[in-house]
Figure 1: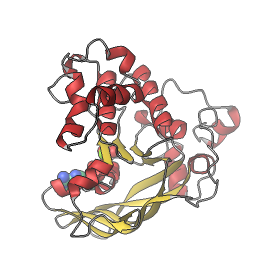
Figure 2 (figure 1 turned 90 degrees about the vertical axis):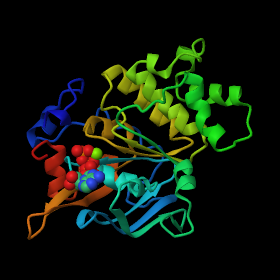
Figure 3 (figure 1 turned 180 degrees about the horizontal axis):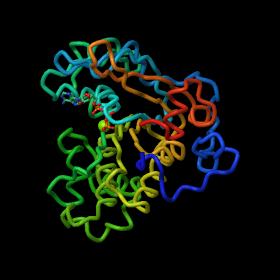
Length: 298
Ligand SMILES: Nc1ncnc2c1ncn2[C@@H]1O[C@H](COP(=O)(O)OP(=O)(O)OP(=O)(O)O)[C@@H](O)[C@H]1O
Ligand SMILES: [Mg+2]
């Protein structure tokens, strides 16, 4: 439960303290002109009854939702409810896990990304991913960013592209004189920004982030959060986070997942509630969402 509460968070005001609900009103981002109802103006991902299995085990059940363009969507919910599993299905990363399979329809701009003629490598170029632990390559800072464009045969001025991506990732000023240094010489927070620079170097449209700040200190976390908000002008971002203050601060829309236990005692992840972040945090419709965000569960 402690992970749900950010020690740096503002104290709950008395009326909210009475309900036990976390006071996110002080940290909720602005609504960026998005509708406050559940409509998604520009749909990037359209999921219809998406199910994800590992062999016979169904990890995720019946997810139907739409992800909006240039929005930041947060996935929250207790450990094991399938957030990472579902996120990985957005760019066919589960293909790399033996026995994993996706059923239902997961459409990206109207195309089924699991159709037989779709190239998963191209899917992953358009839909990039950033993990909890910054997975920098054992190469120089420069080469980390240049790697994807080179592999993809992009005809670009590489120096310009490396500078542009490091600038977009809010890292340029810190590394511009050390581009030949090993990426391992960077701090964790810098490495995570380098991974983001590497991710955007191949010109994706979507960035999936699975607990990108989980291994970072509060200052590095704040930098990544600011960066996410800036990047949302050009990219669609889906983030998994255990930090509800973070979900409230950065996301436009929040999806709350939980795990139901079936008759055989097996736990399956399920989407409970999805909507504009402000509504999910201030007036959730489902009591399970209310319990989770108020810290009574999870
Ligand atoms: N590679 C795998 N093979 C088999 N089962 C898996 C695999 N990865 C995850 N699972 C199972 O799928 C379910 C969902 O796991 P997942 O990692 O997606 O949850 P999560 O919501 O991301 O949890 P956390 O918050 O702890 O990261 C769990 O029961 C987990 O044990
Ligand atoms: Mg996870």
